[in-house]
Image (cartoon, rainbow, N blue to C red; front, side, top):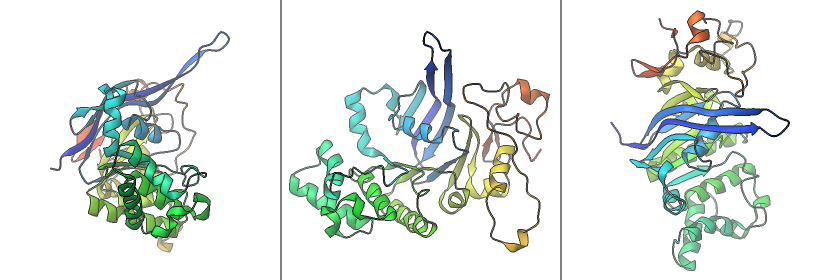
Length: 323
């Protein structure tokens, strides 16, 4: 078994809204008791509908947002207890690639300045060493060194995302959060960026926490998958196992919604998820999915299911699909 790089235990992030003189206080449970282990050199994908807490979880894991409670362990060290100075030192090993390649790069800075900024922040070395490292980073992501003097507006979306990846790798991290990092790109460019990420993972021994809503990308790219619904993980397992035999009803509905190009599948009925996702400010009692689940029974409406292990899978459901 590979070493655990990063793990969380009962990690929560709650946001308080309102509570003023003329408004009620609401608590948004964006992340609500998430426990998981991410192993060295694996790609762990996190999927779920928009608003389920995927991005919030990724940013809390890096302490870009402060957790409300719980622990974040990076190679055994509790990040949630570190002060700002100690956490700054750890950030060299913990990086993120953002979703929007147009918004994540400063339009007023040249590419060399963008790549040099994290190097200077962490005291990489002399100005000459930083310039050489910036050139190496462009080589790593398949861009010419002559682009160092260019501005972000002179690049396509795919090239900008390569620059975002290069910036994330500047200080030689070993854990990278990819937050919807290919969702804004054309399909052909997506494939190129995914291949680049795979090559970099093999060469640099990286571990990825890959946040996405695109399950077709997940099946191609991820080793394990976590399925998130309203701030909680409802299923975690190996990618092929989870796609071939989903145990949680929500997982089944997500997989059934993936478009199929096979004409032999045309006309076959597929289960369709009905209803709207409940508000995270007003969570239903019991299982959070029971208001949309066609298999729900009385216990689902009153008692929240706890995670349990079935084979190599973790699933939070009173009545898994195989039973």
